[in-house]
Image (cartoon, rainbow, N blue to C red; front, side, top):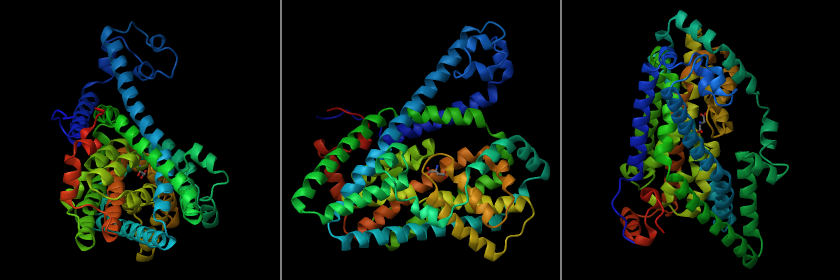
Length: 480
Ligand code: ASP
């Protein structure tokens, strides 16, 4: 069936994103307490919080029609954003289970599995260590701590102190034995139900490997089942993606309207160092790795994974973005499923280059705020602990900051410094998550090309030109 020409999905998402940022900024700057008061709302916080008592009773005066409309639009906006995130979370666990079982079992001999597994983990660790080093380098050269006055620091510490305490309490210093032991679930179904990704990855890999060790005719049956289920889940991804552009708008508006630019301005130097580091990874380090190892043009790569990058940015969750990352790598880049279904779920769980870089910069920044000089040995400790902390970071919003506590503790940097950077964490979370999934996809492409498991641009174009194999991501809708 010929489909009518439409804007490609990544452009639709980008438009949603930019529109959301603009509207969010407009709300943040123009809609204040007086605006609410003029509409008869004295207590805007409880008016818009539908979890509290009936909102109308919280308003002292009679709310106007505009106030009711604003409340409705706000609720609708949150509904669309939450619906999309629910959809993505719905997919995240099944896709890891199904694709890893198929991925591990289709690398049908253990030697191949070991080879690809070793390559994947080695490159993941190397890129993470490089990312932290880039972060540390930038932070040491630019010295973002010197741009923040003591009053600003103390002001933020007072404003965000309580929230920071909650984060600090949430972080537990890992015991290496427990950490490793905890990868093995006591009950795999429990791990699936709770969405404990590291355990889910472990259990799925184990089942996949075991499938290669039993009689082929029996294994084939099970593998075909999971293979078909992977296809089913990919279809669900297409369905969920229909609302992606609206959802991206909804998610961004909320964040920007709440945060505004004030906090961002005060911590501009710190934010710029993190963003410059992330861009260096995405635009310099990965392309070099590509040029040296993979035969894929970086432009082609970047274009192919852009929908996943934009979704990672707006959702701040690599786990939730995983189905789209897989779709982009397989459909748009032509990576064979046997590699992508193995490399990507592991990457979304343990490979967090952006998070590691951010933790390095944040540690040095907080140290600078408190006039602490970090020795080379301390910076090396940061490289080590941030690598481990990023592995332990779950691919959901905000966890990178909780794991930062462990990095700070390892070199004795004051933990309450977290309060200073808390106000800008979400925006940096969005940026680092984009880098996280770019790193996963990059390693996937590198491993695939070293295994000869990636199509040439001509093959991808030919496949996408075929009406029945049309690229579902770009198509962005269902028409069959
Ligand atoms: N949100 C990040 C991710 O999902 C993790 C983090 O750094 O907080 O990849």
